Image (cartoon, rainbow, N blue to C red):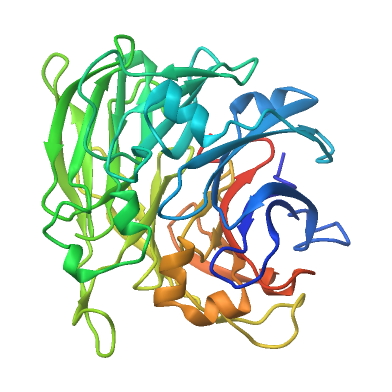
Length: 427
């Protein structure tokens, strides 16, 4: 069935509004009188956190399910974990056991948690970005899938990468691939060109043995390339995937070659743009997010600084081919009759299971939002729907859908991660 509810993480960090951050539901049912509106809002403990979330696959098979939020308060403090339990009617039942930074520190010697995915055995695996002091440190922590208690480090006494952020795995090939991210205490303060060539922004793609939980290969993707989003193809037999590098503008394809070895090759390159009045004379695309359609036909990239979303057709015998592109500077909506100027570029994306609707928010990370798009921080971010041509390729902004987070009761907020009830392209 078509998706009817989206879960969106929202923060007031960097907005000068002293209100708790929250997890919001958005009505996606066109037949609903509340279509395109924010519904239930579940507040989180504390304030000023940049939030991410994950919706485990079991959510679509149960009358209740658990949704995991993680929050990072600032560049000098570590991360919390907030498991929520919901009913299928989307009413929040309770905030589960909160995992405090001190627990992560004493149990795992880690402190900056990032992307979360459920493991094949039902446990929850969370990538790590840094140590409790904010220095770079990769690796993973794992939660018990039933009790949600912190079990400890996932990696099996091997050297961890210097940084970490995202990951994806293929059980049939016994492999997990992770990206690099950045050093939290430096990148958390905003983008500084002086940090280039100093190891602040990661450069490695890491290949792990999934069953042995050990690091087997590392690929150097270039200094300051900053590989962030990584995805395998959805086909469980597929032995290939893609990783998007934010600062270099290059998307690499990784694939299995001889034996248990893996290789990488350049698949897409988005050149920087010459600009005036920005922090650098040539600005990278800053590819924040990468998605692959559930049928493995299309790949999507969101370029937060260049301001566009790109759709590429995937093929086994040639490099991805650009077939769709859109850049929504403004959107007139029947829900918002006045012309709404959209500040900021596309950041986090989510794709429906049928591949026809691509949802996107425009907040990346609050300190970076304030630095690059201060008008967005003042007026609040938005969530848009991009209509997708799944036959020939093509993208178009749906002008009947616009969620304006600038109209929240407590003031404008920043919306980030999106998950769809019943499943999506990130499940």
